[in-house]
Length: 307
Image 1: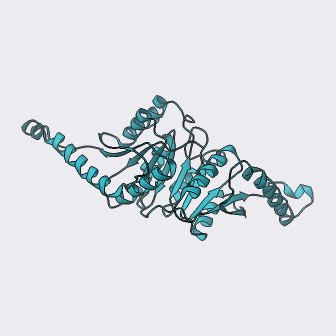
Image 2 (image 1 turned 90 degrees about the vertical axis):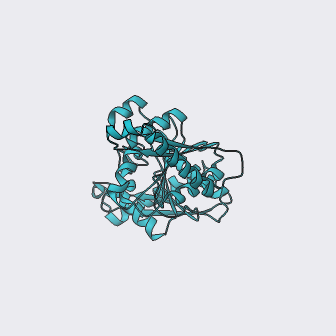
Image 3 (image 1 turned 45 degrees about the vertical axis):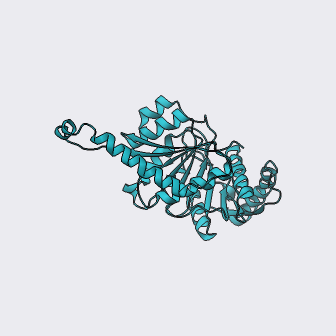
């Protein structure tokens, strides 16, 4: 499983920044990261031209002050000391999404860490927009410390789900706290089942038994020895897989959901189309790590054109 060697963390000078920095510390330690970049984007200074001429260094001083403030915050809360890591604070100007896309491409980022806020207008839309365009993994963190005690891994037994499980096992194995992996498969009874002469209940049992067989084959491809793993099978009767996953995560009090992403859309994780993107927009309580191998994305220029 590839490492999160290069991490990009988005900060907005809110109280949540401390949690994001500390989360980056944990991920760095568990993933063997080499470079961590902390970015703050200033959208618009909104300074009248007259004042710009009268105080030509005003913007430069404001940027320097912003950088020093964040550097002090990072110094106090980024505690990864297991190995030498390059830590850099970046202050960008302009549209937020474009700034992130530029840096992701420039530094060949493996993982983005962003805060996930409850207020849609205060960050939810931005997180979804970046997630759709980024060609790397992404951790969305609500306002809470990051923990690995209970890791929820939804799976459809695909190679993308395998990438998610591999990352989950790596984090659990290296975590300093005892971790439990709950691997969930959500199954459905196909339309037309009644033509087989079987009842809904009978065919549901067939689907579940088949899933159990697939689970054994799937898990055998990943090194899981010594880990606390629980398999879970849940039926979806309303054609709403994501809601089933989210309600399960809430029920088991998951500390982290890890899903695998495929295709051009970063959050089109384990399902056909972009259904998993719903998990990103629906969930404001539980951290979500979308695992995506680098290179599985549209061209950089094309991504910018879509913004």
